[in-house]
Length: 409
Image 1 (cartoon, rainbow, N blue to C red):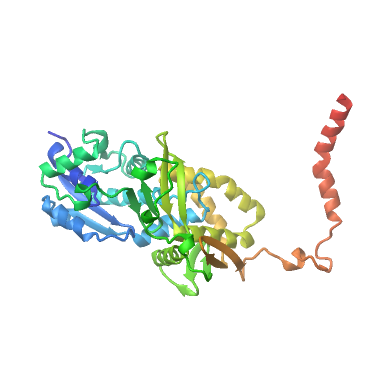
Image 2 (cartoon, rainbow, N blue to C red):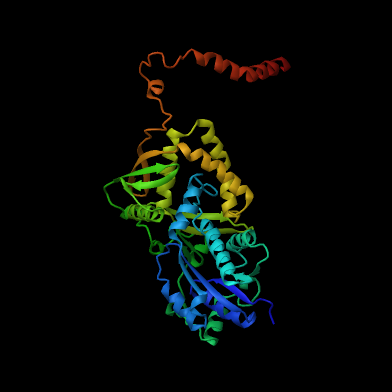
């Protein structure tokens, strides 16, 4: 008999988590609370409720929460203030969603008196780390149940057999061979892994992509869009102010239309293996380009360079599951302080997979001084003779070294 009395399961209603629900009931003989997060994945979530009811989950133990605004406002936007990119390409669409799911799962555990939490991440992936680091950071004594590290249902065939044995509904697509990819979606991105993509030499099939047209099929006419920022966060598109999740949704629509945001990547997983995945991040790709553009005229040079130095470290923290760590929170405080003057607008041209900056300005915080930067007569605003001493002083150590090398022959 298990000592677990009640467990909160991160539950999508799909094959894996439906099997986990039944397995928890049988193996741990505990009460199960299901939690389904709406992060803007674009799927109907009500079927998850019906499936949970079918397995005897009481209505008060079924949570389906709309977290879209919190996700973008409190997780995506803070990450983009740092212009965060992992390994030079990946915009961390899956990684940034996990700390919010973990946070809400722990909140539900406390509210329902649960003593355990469970997830459907495999023992090969990064998500097990991200979820569990979040759990322990927010509820240190919680019991974590990771079925993929405990059971022997380690193949799709075994999962299907278990489902059929226990009367778990199986969608026709699973019976007929299943979807060719493992997918994860939220408002920031959609990812594709597995099957055809496990050969890194094979080009992704065009039919795989869900949110974006191919650049070849994008409109022949460019589209201009104006983005406005306040303290580093996007607040309006083409003059229309919206909630954070609505802004990102609109950028996804614009980017998808113009074939923006596709990525084919082999990344280094936390557990040590290399993994190939394809990603669509149309809105995030636009947002990153625009944010860097407004920072280019509002950030001090050394502050901007410091942010660029720190960004890879910050990206690794998020990728590796350390969102709730003291070092990430300390670094976030520094980043947020740099964003106080990042106010203004950016104009972009969207065209066949490209995001092209065509203008930017800040009425209150621009550090661009045209009277100094001009190639025309600057009326004495900048004394070019000052550069002579500056250059000679900076060259002094190299001149000394060169003289010493000459003496050595």
